[in-house]
Length: 235
Image (cartoon, rainbow, N blue to C red; front, side, top):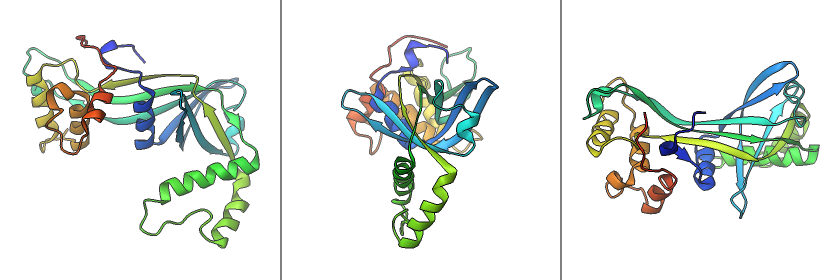
């Protein structure tokens, strides 16, 4: 990922929140047979020192295809993204761009034993089910629990201590206040590239312009989102 200081995101807490909000991850390995990619949900744990650890599982035989445990794994998290028209700028001439937030996390996965794998599967299921009106928890009933025990043999649990990450929050931070307001208006409109979610992220990434105008956004959250962004101009 190209390094652009104005868009660099280095706050591990913000990256952890990105993972929680967008847990569908791409796992990429450079194996002896070439590149291999798979897609799985992940959970994230934060250490008191700011370290990150990912928890997930793969279905067999992905653990062999990826040669898991033998080398570093790249985990890609993709957040909101979308097209930004130059017609939304008050600066001319201009070219279109794409706003996005993403993180690349690197680490060597630890393969979990069957008991630990079951615990991770339970965490994954319960994490996503708890939002449902009638959660179907993995250990919620004897029947569910017995079924999970039977099928878990087809999965391999992973713990991935993140050794390093690179992340980018590109939400028009290098644009003028006039352009930022036009961009948000365009995203909140009804055109072909409208995106209320992306508009909210542009607001959050630019607290100096929108901090007091973003409903429901605590000031601390806005400041954290922009804490690692320098005031440089970049394309």
